[in-house]
Each structure stands twice: as C-alpha cells, then as structure tokens.
Length: 294
Length: 294
Image (cartoon, rainbow over all chains, first blue to last red):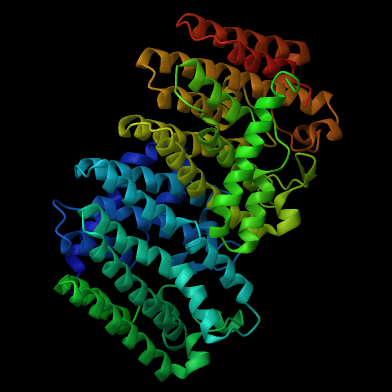
C-alpha cells in the first residue's frame, strides 16, 4: 500500500499538520506539544483513508481529507491513553518513544482527553467547509461520537485489559476486537458515506465493509505481533505473549488466522459490490489489511 | 442555596439519573459503573443550574435541564481525571472515595474520557428535543467543546499542576483559575444563552457574568480549603498547602480573598443588569458563590 496510497497518505499528513497549526495555539504549550506528538507520528492513516474513500465512492462532492482527520485524532488519543503506565505501559509506538515517555503521564492523560473535543471541532468545521447540510452533519458527528465512545472503542479498550492473563474464546475475542479497533474503523467508513449523502442501504453496506475489514486488520495485528520485528512495526513486538493476551494465532494458528482475515476481507468487498460501491481505492485498502507488513 | 435551589437541584439529579439509564447500557459494565459513580455523586450542580437559568433568563422555550446535564458530565470527567494517582492523587471526592479508588485507575481513565463524547451526545439530543435550530445547535455545542477542551478547562488543569511547589503571582493565578474552572462555568452560562436564541450582546453579557462568578467560585474554593472540614466539603481539605499550591488566601489573606470574590460577583450582576437579564435565580446563583459553606 505504501506505493499505491503514498500520495493520499501524504495529503492526510498535510491536513493533520494544518489542523495542528490552526487549532493547537488554543491549547497551552505542553498540551499542544503532546497532541502534535501524538497526531503527527508516523501512522498507516487507515482511518482517514477509509473516510476519504467512502466519501468519494458514495458520490460526495469536494475533498473530505480534513473531515477524515477527525477519526485519526480519536485514534491517536486512544493510543496515547492505551500506552500509559496504568494501562498497557508501553514504551514504543509508531517507531518512537510513547507520548508519556516524552511528555509525562499527566500531560499524556490531559492531551489525550483534549483530542476528543478537538476531533469533534475539526469534523464540524470540515463539514461546514464541505457545505454538508445539518441532517448529514448530525449523522456524521453521531458516527464519530459512537466510534469514539459509546459502546465502541472505549468498551473494547477496557475489555482488552480484562482479557489479559486469561484465555478468551474465539467469540469473546472477536467481540473485544470488534469493539476496540472495529468501532472506529467502521465509524471512519460510515462517516464518509453519511457525509456524502448516501442512502440507508449504501450506508449499511459501507458499515458491513468497515466491520469486516476492521476485524481483519486486528487479526493481522496479532499475526504481525508474532511474526514482525519491533523496527518494522514501530512498536514493541511480542507484547501479547508477555501480557498473556488471547490472540487469533494462539486460537487458530498463524495460517488459520490469516485465512480468517482473508475471508473477512472477501465478505467486506462483497457487501460493497452488491451496492455498486466497490471502487479501486476501497478494494486496495481492504487488501492492504491482509498484505501489510507494518 | 440548599433551600432556595433544592427543587431545581432535585430535577438536575433526576435528569442525570435518566441520562445514565438511557445512555449507559451502551457501555460495558465496568465503564458504565464508573461513569454512573462519577455522574451521580453528590455535587453542587452549579453548572447545570447556570445553563438552565441562563436559558430561562434569555427567553428559551421549554425545560433545558437535560441540556444542562452536558457540562456537568464534562465537570465529572475532569474531577475523575484530576483525582488520578498520576495527577492530584486524591482519595476523597464529594464525600466518597474517588473513582479510581473504587474502580481502579485504568477504568477511571477510560470512563473519564468516555464522558466527553457522552456529554456531547446528550447535549445534541437535548437540543433536538427542544427543537433548537441548527445554527443555535452548532453554537451551543461549540460552547460546550470550548469549555471541555480547547484552551479552556484542560489548559488550566495542566497549568494548575505546573503551579504546584512554586509561588504564582496573583495575575498568573487568575489565569490558571479562569482557564480551569472558569472556562466550563462560563461555557455552561453561554450554552443556555446561545440555545435560547439570545442576541450577541446578551450572550456577551452572560459570558461576562459567567467569567466573573466562575472566578469568585474558585477563590472561595481556596478559602474553603483552609476554613472548612473534610466532612462538610466532601473532599480532603488542606490539600493546597500539602501540594504547596499558590492560593488566593496565601496571596491576599482570607479577608482580602473574600472581598475579591464579592467584588467579582458584583461585576457579574452588573453585566446582566445592563442587558435586563438579571433574574432572581441568576442573582441567587451568583450570591451562592460567596456564601456557600460546601
């Protein structure tokens, strides 16, 4: 995907940088520095690419890159809090020391929480800029709020912790991952569709696509935690074993986990095809979920 | 104020309880429990009273109590994070053990952050219920976002920490408090005015009122930390001295601090009077800031 999407990822990076320049002067310097550190670190930018591509696929007018920054800010906040000493206590993230290692735990807590209202403000302003009407704006922000909190990511974040040190069934594991990673990936895809003005059937298809590839993404995260290196991945590998977390490879074996991820990607693509929404970009993003090495 | 506003405070409690019943099933049980613990603990409910009363004073139609719960949820999140071991490390809040003492630090971090999107969803739904149009809805949510994050409360929360262990000038101290407590109190007052459809001059007057009484509130917090008891206040007293925080009594003496708070309340009331917005309720809330004993 690095080749196929490098230009798109570049424009996401530019938009995130612009967001920092525009909004961060409103924050006191230490908080602003920690937010910038979290938002501008090297990332795959899957969520903004998804939001942008579903917006395009559903016929949205104009460039949704700024809007697409909002779920990435939520994602960055969740990483910042996940890595805290009283959470996963991790030292490396995206190839650099974690935010609390650089800025201290209290600044990381404050800055992480500050990224939630920031993300919502960024989405709201971007929707105004795109001249999206109030009904679609409401729906788009609702999707973001759900992805950010209620029953979604935050639930999984906690269930993930509770799963440490004990074996989970495959079903329970899928529920954890669907909640944690899946909710925000699904929300990113839905946001683009809703903002574009897509009808309910198309939004539902995009949601199924998001849910399937989000789970595939998480399965491959577990696979990469076993097979990749800390340098390639940019975060500490082998953490799952240290934390005695239930993982897909532990339950299905490496080959079984890969097969499950590939089958999920297929289901996601089928959902889009059935509604005539399968663009080349959305196909590539889905394929990247199972071919990525970082 | 306990007598004057007991009925109003009761209806705020009911509305907060209803919010928990309606929204918390969306969260996994440990997060829901911690949110409920934080939201339903005994509080003065200054922020919801303010939002409700400014909405009434500016001629808003219907009951804004549900809308008024939103800033209280933001306030509860900030208390939950403030009390964390890596922040103020406090054991008592509102007469009970702090959230992390009961639910653990990681649940308190996750639940605190979850209260931000929850508050925004509650405000959004309440504005729909009140049939507030999209321009006013946008302005009201913007006020809440500012109070919750950008340059407001979160800034002060951090500056407050940095002020520990060293003396601050009066000017610097006012900046800390205006940012931390003031931003959300001011936002609560502004939300009611904006949602009601008040013109720019009235919103500005309500903002000046909120800013003045918010600072008075904080000054009296410092005074009570020195003169009250842990039982009456429901949180550990004498913490400021232990943490070597700069306080108003330390800078102005107890009598000087009280006088400064009273003068600020007068300024706030004058701002409302000048626009014909000084209701009995808004006067009573302002007076409570300097007469309260808890």
